[in-house]
Length: 91
Image (tube, rainbow, N blue to C red; front, top):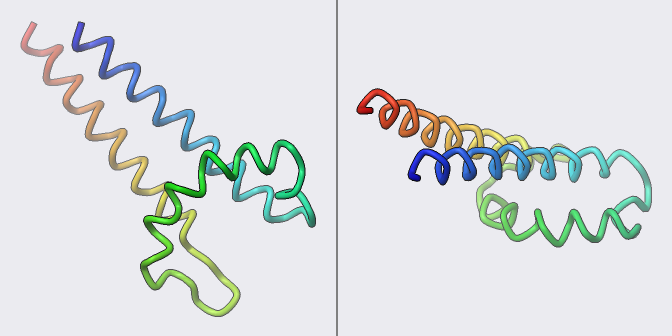
């Protein structure tokens, strides 16, 4: 049962990472954040990105917030996968 929960959490982290990546891609298209898709993705991703916007990650016109957020999601996913692997070794 724990295996399935950890695997589900890992898959949800992967899905959320994809949403963060789509959010970053939307910045390349003028007005994309005002579309229905842009508003939906923004409403799902912005609360998470706000955690990282407090950090000094903006250098001139470059904003590394999304990159750091994606890195944090990868670290979290790796942590879940290591827990999952250790549980599988116990069985």
